[in-house]
Length: 165
Image (cartoon, rainbow, N blue to C red):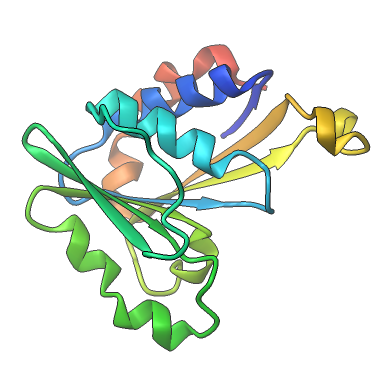
């Protein structure tokens, strides 16, 4: 599914729509280049789950966890990891167990270590690509990998219809 957002607020709304469909055990991998809005997406996702405190990328701590009612949101950032073994050592899939939802920035590094996930790829719009200081529009591609998100893909499509390309 391909979406378009015209502002950071729109990107947060897309994230919130996905978060409202999230359930215990879910893994969402955020992919894309530096500065495309992965952290903005994470903030919208967290806010929709009930995270009240400010969310920043856990670049140096690798994972921040937030209690959201009956769920725990684990927000990971794998930017600093250089080897697949380092990613495997984090045991990311286990974080999603026991009432957890895992949201991973720089998720490309974890794709091979988690089977069932939703991949959210963010990119700047072609029209904005030449003026990175003023980028507002984003293209967001969403792919369900494995059965869990595939079963909810229809509801996901409906929830995001206003952003569809």
